[in-house]
Length: 169
Figure 1 (cartoon, rainbow, N blue to C red):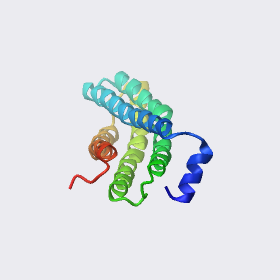
Figure 2: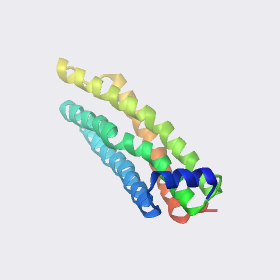
Figure 3: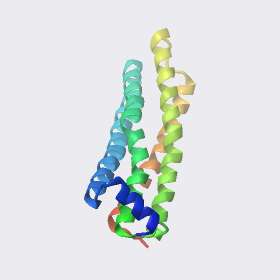
Figure 4: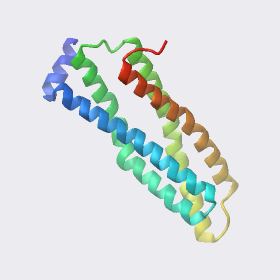
């Protein structure tokens, strides 16, 4: 373990198993909340029922703030603490691949959150006025769906790398 990482690790006073627990729970929240809210929002979108879409999109945005955002913040730190506790160089190939996938997930997730907020506003306005969902809603939904796939696949890749601690090739 390099000196700086070791001193941070020791200063915080948590042992390896505690960091592992924090990392696993936060990754579970990240993946589970993402998959669960995406499923709920997608299924409500498919119905075309504006009231359902308003509820699902509001709850999805709320879940992102309450669960996903804290997990996104905890993951890099807890991962660094785990690597430090194992004495792994932070430049290991598999860790660098993990960082790149994490950045890709974030590059998809940030616009997805913005799109969810917009989709909610479009649906709430449609509900309030009694008009149908505007084309802008449907365009946002298509982009939202398209961004979800690379994020989902990338998280599966991160799980693989965390488990096997090596590149698959």
